[in-house]
Image 1 (cartoon, rainbow, N blue to C red):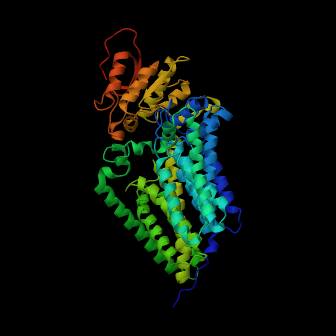
Image 2: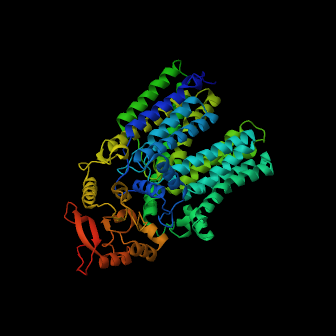
Image 3: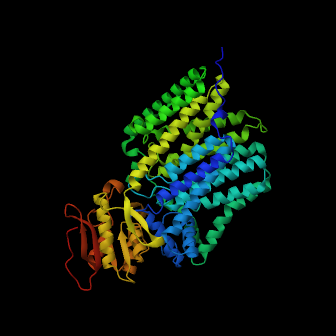
Length: 614
């Protein structure tokens, strides 16, 4: 006998169409105010974003004068922001807020196409809190507000737009949507290789899905024209001062590390660590554990849903259970392995892809369910390609702030909408499952916000003034923060107008705030850059430019597999020899043990004995 039907799922939905967007807007403003001007670090990558935008806005040329290993689009967009509004951190932050608004708008619109208002609202707000504004590591560069790479955030938005255009194209058959999809794909090729690969995969997947639709050849050509247009315009832009071959290489800068062999996992210590390949057995076992745990929880909640659906007061019992789950997970967050749980997505996303692919093969071309299945398949492809970059250890922090975002959205929509709808059709249930899924997602949001608050609260050291102000970690927070601030203060004391500065391995934020040009054009000197550029070319750049001052800071070998320049015999020996011959050690910032954390070198006018302490 069938159980008495529970309250319908739409009882747990917004009756007013404006309620969801209003909550998203209020959440966006609250998160923006909370995080405003808090992000970045002296010796991490956000400084490169500011420095490149500043220098390009003054007329310097990318790739020829400024060395970079990704596509040209993002830095030129940021330079345009500085050119139009003026050089200031706040102007770039406002532009990044606009990117976040685009992310939220596209997500909400896409999710609303296949589900309901509650699902769209909760998933979008959770994405804002965990990924767009999250601060889950000490480094404040793994979010959409102060990203380590604008190619990551711009490329993510372009991929989301690409999916929206493809979905609109399949539903309306209008050629304009095809052109828009092609344009987004072409622009994504100018950002970051992972996102370029995702965009190309989306295009191929859509072409396969669209074969039964018999899209006219002229519409396909218009789409191809959209792909080629940004590439041709970019090539023409670089052609003004470069040979055709050089201009092509600059246009396809996003693929430079692939062509150079930098992507070799056998060679790249850092990438193996990020992908969990440094401990293959341990991470594989943790993946199995997370899959078993999440599947067991899903099964348990499904059984609970079936039991509660037969109760007279099932609605209120469901809400009580869900509220209890949320309170327990929030107050005792250690009960659930939040940081390891994303590994379950490695199983979930391929499962959704296979389900959608099999269903599509069985459907008629005119089936009303086809557009939803195509969208699900495209989203699964997007999720799988980006998750693949995280290997067997996907997380929501570090690179996961954009690479795990699509997979999280898929999981949220699946658990908030599709599984409850299936359970409702199966035995009249789904309401309890939906309530419990809502409790888990909200708990995840608030737990991650609490993680972020821990780090945002540490950002009280103000660098810069007015619209150029940025709050970094205070000296009291850690020894690392104290050393970074001490180094900045020492450099500020020694800095003179018109002097140039090169920071090794990285520290372009110092160049930006001291308004000191790095004449070598190499703002980040880590092993992958060394392999792409070649040590001889790097040394020649320093020889030609001869910076007024060179700052060398500690590099943790656990990060890259290499130590600090001057200490590690396997890292840039030619450059170190040249510095020893031409520069003298003028000042140091010691760490707690008395060893130099940062060393300041200036040109020596006469031969002198080089300090051998390093």
